[in-house]
Image 1 (spheres, rainbow, N blue to C red):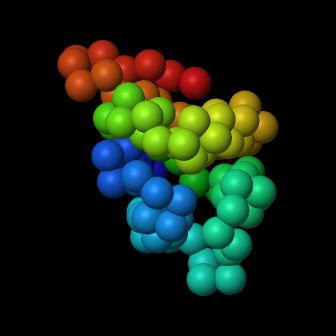
Image 2 (cartoon, helix red, strand yellow):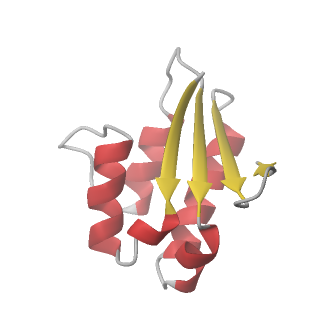
Image 3 (cartoon, rainbow, N blue to C red):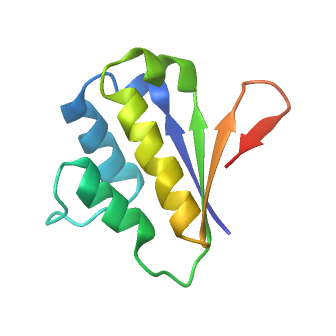
Length: 97
């Protein structure tokens, strides 16, 4: 399983979030910078199961765009059986979606 760690503290604005996600998720340049495009990318068929580990979720949730971004990731994980979203609590445990 491929694991990608996403730091919620590095996505304070919509623009910074998409720049960061494009890099971390290795999204193609033609991928739109909006939630629909992110959802499409995360639900696209892939042979490699992928786990997104979201760290510092509480910071991401503080920003206006953060809650929508998290909701999109969780919706994509429910749709794509090869995608798992994990919220790292910073302790020895993680929460799975």
